[in-house]
Image (cartoon, rainbow, N blue to C red):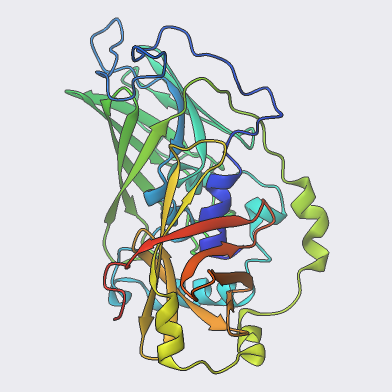
Length: 359
């Protein structure tokens, strides 16, 4: 999967499905007079006085792009050439060697940047459960990180409280996983997290990454998570992807072979801000921007990780192997777009002009 499709899939896979056992009221949470969860209520506290981070959390739609490209905020000059070259090669290969998606290996450190997770908190240990049946343990008993760890998929984590922020240090990751949708990482990877529960329904995680094979200096991203009340997490097993791996053929550059030439005035009609609202969860809103630079359209999620859209007809475009199509009303005005994905087609309604719609 390409980065944008990974970002979309990370969110779509974790959305509730009405036919499954996911309508279970969460006991003991604040609610509004009409019985709905009050996500703006004060953050709960544990018996020891620290914020209680326990709960089921899903990455906020505006942070979803990081699961596909964790270096989306860095300038090109900040990324080491070898890592950038490998990332671009994996994009060209349409991510067909992704170990988490097509080899069913644990996600490794990229699990920290997206999807759904359940946090279970005790005074001396925090456990984080993920949909793919992997997990993390964060030890709060004062121990230090191991000096010479046997590298593992999920690494080793210790934490301590800095007032109301939980600070987690993680290291000891093996190098068999990808850092995101294509960037590599080494066993030297170290991650520092600062977790703050702003209120009942919102968790903010500041991630600082030290990865000498990707960037010459540490970089920090802020990833936001939303509470998922009155539902439950189901397991996700990727054996279907593994079976389909043999059918993955082609290159990202094949898009150009089927490209058609569209005038800038035609392309400009598609620029705008689009919104995807989950039909199962109306609180989940993904902001998609389509912008024009010269005679090239680009698409991004919440302003991050712009990817080129290659026209294959007057209304259809290819984005690194994925099909996106625009639709008009009877007056010829663009009303929405549909992005096709294995997890389900995504309809995004046009809401207005994109920030910096014409670059």
